[in-house]
Image (cartoon, rainbow, N blue to C red; front, side, top):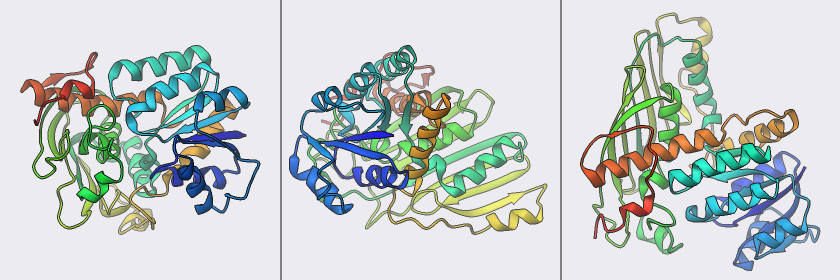
Length: 358
C-alpha cells in the first residue's frame, strides 16, 4: 500500500515505525523544514533510500503521487485543513490527535470522508494498549455490571525546554493546553469506556506555572454520562520533576479496575465478582513501552490498512476523534462561561479561549 507522511516532528517517528512494521511502501515524506525529513529518515535507516521522495509542499506531494494512505503529524492547528485536502484527493488518512481544533472542522472531516468514501482514523492509539484492550473486553462482556463512576488522571511534566522546541505549543490556534495536547488520549479512553454518550461537562482550568504560554497547564472536570454514571478528569503538566502517571479507574457494581503506568499500560487493580482463573494473567499485567506514546501506532495503522482492504470503518474512526475533541472543548467552554456545558457541542473552537489567562 502506497503511503506518505506529512509532518516530521516529535511524534513522526511512531508513524514511520508503524509504516515499516506494516510493510507499507513509503512513497514520500513532507515537512516545511527539509532537515526534519532527513533526520526522521536517518533515524529509521531510510535516509539513503532515494525512492522516498521529499516534499516541502504537501499539496504537490498528493498531486504527483498515487497515494492510498497518508498520515498527518503536523502541529495540531493544521490537522483539519490538511486532512480535508487529502480527503478531497480521495486518499485515506490517519490524523494525529486532536483531529481538529474546533467542532465544525471535525464534523466536516467526517462528512467529506463519507462523501468521498475514504477512511479516516483519529490517532488515539492508546485504545490498542494491551491493558486497555483487556478492560474493553470486560466492559463489552458487562462484567462490571452497572457502572458507577470512573476517572482519568494524567499527571505529567512539561518544562520550558519542551515548549521552546516548538513555539506553536501551548497556543490556542495551533495546540491548546495540557488537556488538548497531553490529556486527550486519556479523555478519549474515559468517554469510550463509559458508553460514549455524554450529557454534561463542568470544568475548570488554570495556568499555574507556564505563564509564557497562552493555554492551561491544569484542568479538572466532572462528566455526566447518559447511562447515569459520572466521571472525573484531572490533567496537568505541572508535576515535579517528571511524568508521574496516566491512570484510568473504572468502578462498577461487580468490578473495579485501575490501569496505570506512564501511559495506561499496566493493570494495577483487577477485581471482579465473577473472577475466574483466567483473570490471574491480568493482575499486574505490564506492557513494556519505550516512550509515553506506547506501542499502539503499529496496531492502529494495521487496523486502518485492514479497514481499507475490507471496506469497513476503522476501529478508531473520525467520530471517535470528534468525541474526544468535543470533551476538551466542552471543558474549555465551561471554564470560559463558568457554567456546566450540555452536549452535543455545536459551535466552539480552541481559539475562543484567547485571552483567558492574559
